[in-house]
Image (cartoon, rainbow, N blue to C red; front, side, top):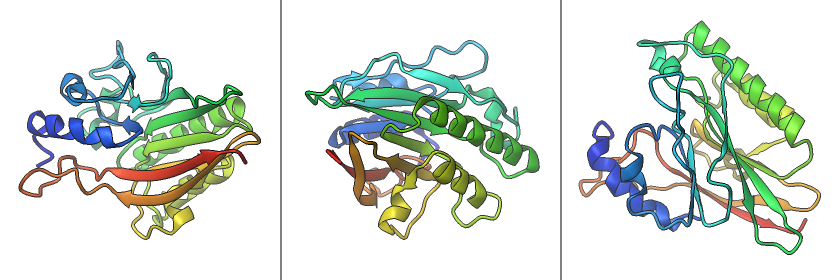
Length: 237
């Protein structure tokens, strides 16, 4: 049961080794247990928060080199302390890592890991909208033409009248595509992988699936969100 992280996270740890690049959210308390059996040579350092009850919970584990001290940006707005998903108790936002692809031309792939504002009240939607606008503005300013991966918990339901415009804002404003929609996965989740290529690097998903191995011996989910696995083909355009 996902209510027992002290039991579940040690089981999640070795399962992550099957993946070249892992982005996680809500890595708040059990960072040691999550990393205990990881074999990824490159792992971000847990965020040293100072302002709120817990850190941003955003981390990345990779076979591709990147700086351990990833860049972290907090959302400009949040809503909810002990109510409305308690967003303001954490330094939620997005985190940037830039991965060396080992190419002779020094090509790098920026990856943004995000955890959006949760909740469905008007104040939650306003805070989530402000955060999405902040994300899009940052992408446009810093990566106008570069290849890019943006992944994480968007808290956006496809087809929801309040959420679909925000999904469209990410896709259109940041010139991204949603991997699930691109492949017609048929099982859209709030945890999403967005992508785009650039002039020097093509990025394209070849498969999307719910990684159903993240269960305990009784078949119970190890997390309250299903793990999403996207296979990406990266190479010359």
